[in-house]
Length: 133
Image (cartoon, rainbow, N blue to C red; front, top):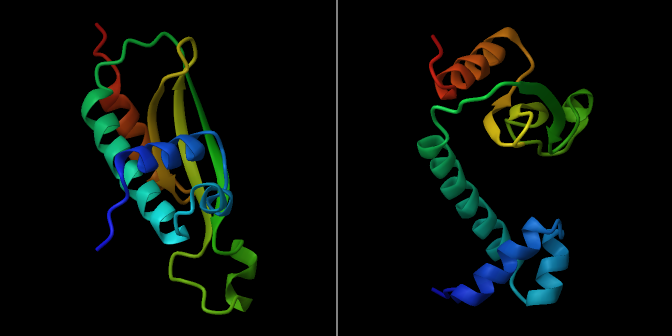
């Protein structure tokens, strides 16, 4: 099993943070697309765990909440006609809560745009805010 060296992993993550595409990163670094994608997933898991453990008791005066539309594999209206579409294909929404002054992402949630997902998101947001009297 090949292991990507620490400097190479750091360079790949830096390029991802700068907004480079996976294909561009493979051309620049010589790493395979699978290596870059796996590193991105691994880094995402670590960041998610860190955020979940450490973004707590946020004393915020103003929270801005929004949702962002995207899609997996194909837009929802095209999923039925898509070839070999995975089960999770279609529209997806990222719910985000940002502290207005510091721009800290207090909470986020990825799911549908429905009442159940909205409640999951708001409950998570409430659990991260500092208790007020």
